Length: 471
Image (cartoon, rainbow, N blue to C red; front, side, top):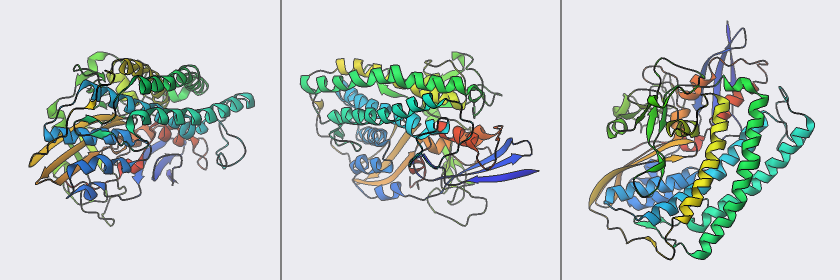
């Protein structure tokens, strides 16, 4: 006998998420169904417009991570136009994107995930809360509350830092086909470095130790919430010489599932053009038309569709389920040798933040001062197409573009949460978040904090995930 519990809405996520979870008599989750509960049409909005408009329109998809959308959109336009950019432009984009990643990971841990483990002050917005399985002393909780507030200030500093080269944030104004319209000078480089001098110590001395402290207090979460073993990274932060801080690649260990230790780099393989071409979206259980993979009708909304339960489609690479995010990036790049679990996601986010913050010092030092990051006004050919891959804080992000006669004829976006919070696909394979919840034991069905902890480890962004595709 099983019982279904519904968590709706899931709070402390970006956007609107609902979960149905089936639990057996022992309290063990035996099935989960993740539902994106809103419909948006950004790709339809872009259709018929100048391709360059996508750089600004797609940033409005998400108020938390607009920078990766800005980068993917400008780079897909550059691919379609046949434009190359200077190393200065790449490094400036890295610095803006890196600032966004630092801000986003701080947001995720302190303001979205931490309150699953530590109770806040007895006042709104910390109440109402789920007051179960609290393992920290009152003194520890007070320290975490202080760090919660300090992280708000650090996020502000990260945003101000990124705005030095972005023009303003959260929406970037300086990314344009051909480069970055802000020029590095001794003054703005010095200002950027001054912010780094405040952020790096906070990440190293507060953020990372706090995540480790939570991991030590809740060690069982290093064994649960792993999800599928297949991991995917599109690669991010090019160095201008052909390399990337996070290379594009796949990690897989056939026959394994759930939480386990990362066995060997031999399971990592490069991401090929054929891999990218094999990416499709299943709509069998999504509120759209019919069809399979790349031939699916991902345009026509159908709220009455039998068997559908989500506005999120189900991206698959070669029909396989992949999870994405900092944990995937860190494993594929060889920077993490832990395991696959809910807690490993929190740890990988923290370690990655330190890695990126450190890398920003190198990118800052690599800039050619008083040399424009913008080479020339890009000329738009009559027609073109392109694909751009990057990594948002939550994982792999791709934009596809087709245009003719100066107007967009097709625009397609697959976001990280589309991968992680996808519904079941044509083969009835559950999405990563759905898989990660299976096996989790819930002590109190009326207060399923264990479910929340696994969900929040993915840092879902439903605003990014719910779209209609017209390419």
